[in-house]
Length: 112
Length: 115
Image (cartoon, rainbow over all chains, first blue to last red; front, side, top):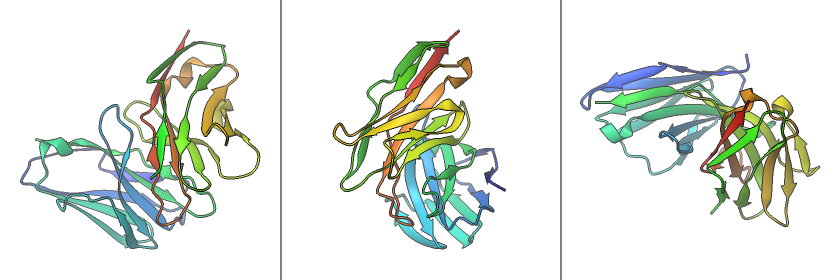
């Protein structure tokens, strides 16, 4: 299995909702990442988990809460989001042997 | 701080012609350099990387890139463009600190191959 999967593909939520994005990889990678990508812009790093521990938080607002329950799973919990949080959320994983990050297809999030 | 510049927002190339997508970088120490491609409403696909070794790196789908340390450049090239190469291309740089690695992307270059 050489892919990163993300669910759901699309998500529409209100500003008072609580939802979660899920990312899964079975490549044995021990680093996992969340990125946010606005239309026609490059991905922006949000969080990095290394060996299931949070190693980088790029000053992301607390309405985004990451979780890494095990080495294969990465969640992003969403609460009280704003319309400007609408974007494509990308998950990635990597391993020291290959250096490059492998990206999932993303979740397209719309906040109403 | 590390950064990447992609000076061209848009590159148009006729099918069958060679293509070049430009990238320059700034990072302290030795750079880890990457090219990714993104098709509409999709995630990023890895094309190639430079970590160390030969300055000419070959990657997926016939793409290659040349690392030039003196010019701090890592331009993406392909000898003969295909219509299917039309996509958004991102150059990226990191310091390679696994587990504490920040991958910084350029602003992207939209490549259009004209039949």
